[in-house]
Amino acid sequence: MNNFIAGAFGFLGALVAHDLAAQALLDLPLRPLTGTCPQCGTRKGWLAARCPSCARPIGREILLIGVGIAVAFGFANTIGPAWALIPYIGFLWLTLALGITDIDAFRIVDRLNIRGTVVLVLALGVASLADASGGAWVRAVLGGLAYFAGTNLMFLLVRGRGFGYGDVKLSAQLGVFSAYLSWGTLGWSVFLTALIGGVLSLGVLVAGLVGRSRQRKAGGAEMTVRDAMRAEVPYGPPMILGAWVAIVLVGLGAIPIPT
Image (tube, rainbow, N blue to C red; front, top):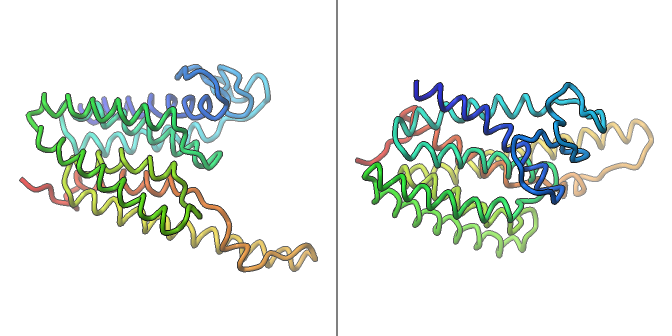
């Protein structure tokens, strides 16, 4: 029953995340569940097959619902019937919204990320007290600080190329919600982020090379290998996916939780 309730909140959260992302990028007031169209900002944009204002067809909303339900099921399986599941569902909603903004505009929007992170970390602290898991919350905060420090170092090393400071600020909440379960979960989150990011970058490079070949055959301007390698790839989604997958793997027994 716990999993089905979480799945329902995953369904709801996908629509909330969709609206928050659209409103944040369009600088609109944050009003979730109003059906904001990400293209024109019209309300009730996803309550019909096409937006009544700009005729944008719905599509990604269905994908987001599937992702939201699947991840919510995974979180519920990992956390179980505990108060901590509530902030974890909130974490899913927020990170899904931030992933959308990064894909759409290469932005981790501060008014979503910073405010949401503070609220969720405090909520996780309250839930940990209710669950008698105060030590886990202390580890979570330390994990968030460690991940934040590590991404700051990475930002300095790459001088911001391909890794923006929005990604650095995103790492704090990812570290908190990964380390709450165990240090191993945080480690796997970082590893999976690097793996997913590498695969994504490789895919973009291959797509660029394919496009280069097609342009050459069509007699158009040819894309160089260097141009393909310089293609900008949002790094926020791999970070979010890495944390999600690590948390879900804990529930599947792939990552042991120290007792």
